[in-house]
Image (tube, rainbow, N blue to C red; front, side):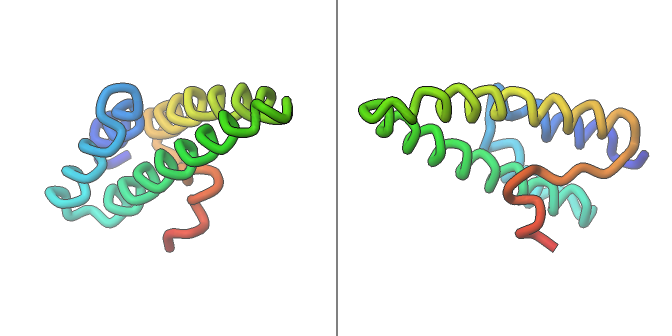
Length: 102
């Protein structure tokens, strides 16, 4: 349960500084798990942002509306799951990008 506070801060930063906090933690903290989570958080925000943008473009074809709802909910719920797992002391990998970082 090391660095629980930093993990919670990292996951919660998605609502107030989604790129700045993970980037700063990556540069300042020496813990490999925090570095891995920081990279995953930044990649997750980039991927979700791209998916929401593509979904917004696809609204013209009506398929974008459910995709926009799903990715919007995902952008809100995934950090909450990360916070809960960090408080409980278990490991967490972001969906989609979690397997990209080893």
